[in-house]
Image (cartoon, rainbow, N blue to C red; front, side, top):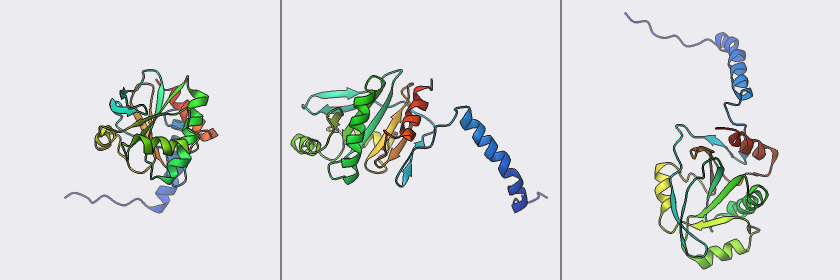
Length: 194
């Protein structure tokens, strides 16, 4: 007869907790896990298994078709936003500042998902300090297709971090402060990954 597994006692959990915490600290100290990065009610969430970022067929703000892909050896932030989104009004200027300050080390790609109306999009962006931002329009449903495959749009705005290998590493919803020390640590962590 098979014996039923017993539940762990409170005492055994308390005895094991310090070893588990030490193990987690050691793995972070060795650089195997990214630093914590939070925004309001969300935090950067690691995606496993990692998948290569799919090429996105988009349209630029001049109406020209483009295919956006990850560049080998560089990290990228792929941000999905909408003109109806209040948090996007906060998020896009921060991303534009980040792109302006780290342009040689980082690609920032902002994709409008809610409309194909170029005038509406440029009017929305005109009211923001987002001059250094590479903005695109999801004219062909690339974001919608990617959202069902590997870039789910779990909220708006949502930003995916693509590592130097071209794989999607994780995401954060909301309007995080990428210019903060925590944001800088997260970006530096993924720059150092090979």
